[in-house]
Length: 69
Image 1: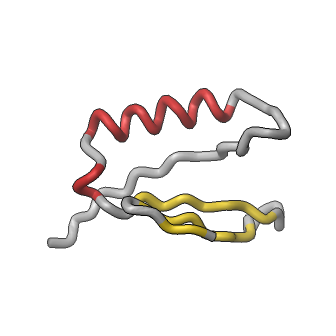
Image 2 (image 1 turned 180 degrees about the vertical axis):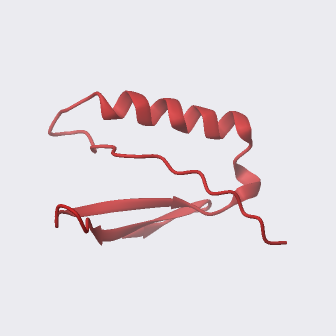
């Protein structure tokens, strides 16, 4: 769906519900220190509690550390 400097957004289908979703993947590990990751976690927590037609619904935050290299 879109790509930026640090990540990309993909159009996906949820295997459990069958609903269409947008999946945002942040790819540039150098751009995200531990402080930034904690900020994203806090934003997801807030977004999960909100519901409004003009807001994107957040479902989960996954942090997978790159162990290669």
